[in-house]
Every structure is written in structure tokens, then in C-alpha cells.
Length: 385
Ligand SMILES: [Zn+2]
Image (cartoon, rainbow, N blue to C red; front, top):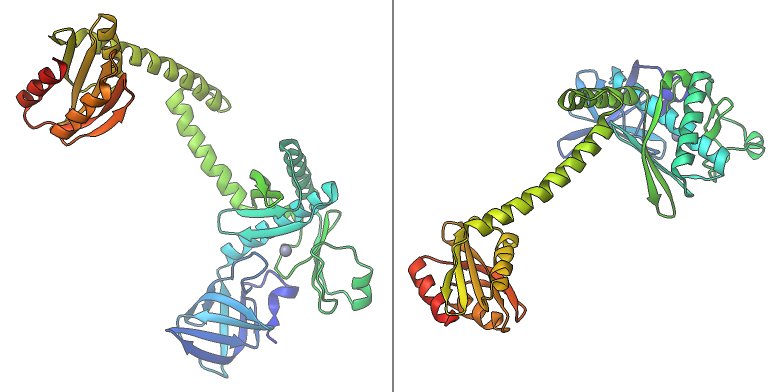
């Protein structure tokens, strides 16, 4: 069994230990020491990184009590080596993990739910609990969790005896009664946990629940604590400042201003659509073929073509074929027919100009490729006669 230095003192950043073994596999080295401050991946928390002597520790895993350091270089067996953690990352994880205990403990006290999942990455964490929560519940949990930080409650680690465990009320109950590691947050929580934690809740700084949603019959919360809560605030503050400047809005009026702008945008879009249809109509130059008509135009949308064809139908034209060039030789078309002949005309168009499209007997639309506009005009005249 490797002696876990972080178990009793979570603040060890550097240490010296003896190399017990070093084995190469696939270009990496598996190093076992007699004792270590490197926390292995586990309980939702990633492994510590850092250095052992001159080599980098890329990953740390625990196998049956033996802690294996995955390094990018070999170390001499039997000799002493100095270890150094990437402390800023590890400390940020300690803050986050303790923040998770506060929130999960608060949820347990308020609602009786269990903590059924935890995952920590280097920017935020997810915490899963076993029951439903509302927006109001989340607000209450978040406030209580932050108040627990202001109280600067002690966080302690104990290894209770089998008799003590039997009498203990704690979360994350495990089947084991021997060697159980209990993390207690004064007045807030008591939980079985293998990870390093700060000494008091004040070190967590702040907790913010970013989002929550139903998950497997319970609730998943996305949250930040400690350094990550500060970094998140900083990032959002910078983004808000940019928006304030762009919108000429006060710092707490950005959302309201965007809502108003969005309303204006919808109005303008509607107005723009109406005007572009009117413009298409006024620029339309229909060619009459008996009591039918065709139009060849450019740059119009299906909507605008349809608007034009409605106008032609209102003017009394029975069959109307409208083409609009979209790019190069590709055209979109609409066919309207008060005599229910749209489908036949569309088949003829598609066949002659390798097109695609269809619709109903009185209206259809599609796309064709026209290399020779005169040939198209001849066909349209023929179809409309
Ligand atoms: Zn934990």
C-alpha cells in the first residue's frame, strides 16, 4: 500500500519519496513510490499532475491501494526522488470538490436527496442528485451554500473506528466499515470521501450554480466554486462590458435591451419581407401567352415568386410559370394553375432542364438548370399554349 500523504495533509505541494518500481509500457513509465502527495483519479476528480525529479507526471491511478504514477521518463529504483504537484490546479480542485460537498450536503439536508454523481473538469463540475428541484429550490440551495462559506466552517478528515462508523450519520454510505475516510464540514455535511479538501469553507470563496436540468429521474446541476467561480465571473463580466458598449446599455440592462432590439428586428424583418415582395411585383415583367403567363427574373425567393404568381392569378392568368435565376445557370421556379395542371407542367420543366421539384395540382415549385434561356422561353410558351 502506498502511503497517501494527502490523506492527512492536503496542502503538501512538494515531498521526497523512494522509488519502489519503474516499468515501461507503450513509451510511458509506471512509477510506484513508498509514499506520495499525488492524488489519483477517483471519486469524480481528475488525477494530479506535476513532476517527479526531472520527469513529468501525466496521470495517476490507484490499483488496490497501490498508487501508480504515469510518467514520461524513467526513474532509478531504490533511490530518493522529489515530487512536486501542479499546485494551482490541485488547489482549485480542492476548492471545487469542497464546494460540491457543501451543495450536496445542503440538498440532502433540505430535500433528503442523495448525491448520485459527481464530475469535475478544469472549468466547472456537474453534481447529480436523486430528486427533482425547481428554480426556487436552486436559489435557496445556492444561498445556503454561500452562507456556509461566509461562516468559515472547519473541514476535517477523520478515520473513525468500526464502532464509531456504526453510530455515524454520513452521506455516500459505503459497505466498508474499516479504513473509512470521513470528510466533515462543520454544521453542513458529513460524507465518505477519498479526496483532499481545504481546511475551512472560507477557502472556497464562492459557489455559483450555472444551470440545472432533469437527469435520470433526478437533477443534474452544473456549478463552479473557488477559483473557477472567480474566473467565470471575470469572463462573464468582460463579455457584459463588451455588450454594454455595443448596446449603450447599463450593466444590469443588457438582457432587457437585447429583448427590445429583438422585437425591433422581428418587425423590421416583417417589413423587409413585405417590401421585397412589393419590389418583386413592381419589377415583374410577365409575358402573356394566351390566357396564361410566364416570368423570367433574378434573385427572388420562393416566397417572392409565390407572391408574384398570386398577383398574376388575381389578374386572371390561368397558368403561370415563374422562374428566377439564383446563381450561374440554376433557377428556382413556381408553377400555379387554376386549371390544376401544375404537376404536368412541372414534369415537363424538370425533364427538359434536369430539375427537381413538385407539389399540388394547383401549385408546385422546384429548381432547374437553364443553360439556354431562349430554349427555356420556347418551352414555356409551348407549355402555356
Ligand atoms: Zn468527495
